[in-house]
Length: 288
Image (cartoon, rainbow, N blue to C red; front, side, top):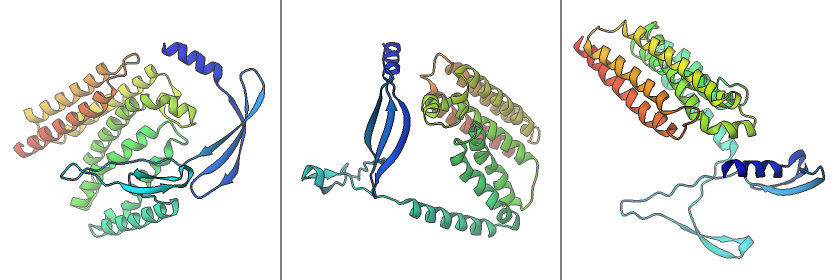
């Protein structure tokens, strides 16, 4: 049934030749598209573009929520609605700038090196949001944004640079990059349609999962490399072994033809992996 629908949808698909804005309002925009139909005829489409919104329903201790009564002019009547709070692009930019400055000031109070490196951390974190517009390596940028955390924590505590936290950063970067590729399999069609970049959007599911496996192989190598700087005992070895087995389980659960387990592999197993690794490595350090 799905393949039949895909065939039908393909036969109905229109090619957009041009698009122009007829009206620009505070909230809505009216667009006119010139399109080519599947039989070769030309036609026009007029539509209203809405910026979109997200809603959250919050319950209090008595399982009650708050609604407000709003008058809606197009329908000439009042409705019960979820309260809306809108933030303009300019207000969002001001919010980001103020918090970025506070971040730099706060980092500078820890020690000189954290203050000097704080703009670098900000650049990596903020850059990730734009990476899918121009590179399929956005998965690694996400991993780098998380991976620099142990380096930053070490510098904050000690005030100087060292290599072992960088090995831990490599572990986190490739681990997160690998499971982000798995998660991005769900978005491949959307990314292709909207001109966004990702490994699943550029390659097949099979090749994408091979990239994920390679990154996780680097993660395991980095884990044992980092472990060589820790006290050698059974707790450490057990933690390294369990972490490796969990990564293997992720790739057994998700295959090119079996992607329904992505939620379990991405969310559940990675949560277990991080907890297990932290518990056993901390225990190894305390008992070392």
